[in-house]
Image 1 (cartoon, helix red, strand yellow):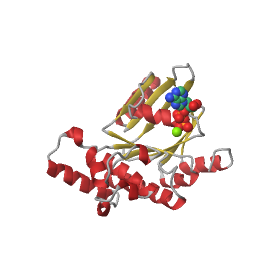
Image 2 (cartoon, rainbow, N blue to C red):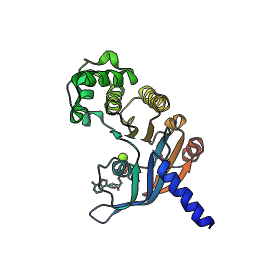
Image 3 (spheres, rainbow, N blue to C red):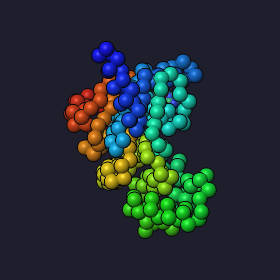
Image 4 (cartoon, rainbow, N blue to C red):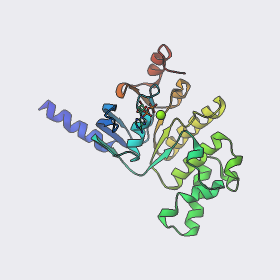
Length: 237
Ligand SMILES: Nc1ncnc2c1ncn2[C@@H]1O[C@H](COP(=O)(O)OP(=O)(O)O)[C@@H](O)[C@H]1O
Ligand SMILES: [Mg+2]
């Protein structure tokens, strides 16, 4: 009976989660296992971080969540549209100017021009870049480029942001600016975010963190506890 109740609670929890990963494993065609029985959930409005050494499977998990890789074993559910922010914005931004790039992501929605304009302006204001709408992408800093990528997701009304080491190419000041800005966006707009990093300073801005080790989820919970634990281990700071 109690077992039955527990599983009903778990099912309820999965249904309410913005992101639910249940017993997910993933193999490359070579047969190499990259994810082993991973389960985690992120609640609506939460800002969570995913930590782990190089090669532990963080990007693979994020790509599965975004539907960029085909699911194999286990189940993944996401509530609402998902936006992805890559480590290198030069692999993501395709148009010559800021405004055109944000608008480009809306092409498939076939909106009226006035609606496109309004969404672009609103999304750029959300990341404090409305004054750079006509700026050439090449003239932006790395942090500004990442904010354009995030504006693209906001313009598409994404409810979930997946960010794969978005600060890896940024200097320390821009790194903290970006993480603070994403924290504010998540809280003010009721978004949900899963942010991959190996920089422990960023843990100060999230609600909860997960640790991947060799493809398995080895720990999760309070970011400060994980920060403390990882400060004394080999994880790169
Ligand atoms: N396309 C691929 N084909 C085969 N193996 C891959 C591919 N992409 C990544 N891998 C391997 O999968 C493992 C996990 O990679 P990844 O998810 O990128 O880790 P992380 O993001 O934590 O550094 C690594 O051993 C990596 O070499
Ligand atoms: Mg990676």
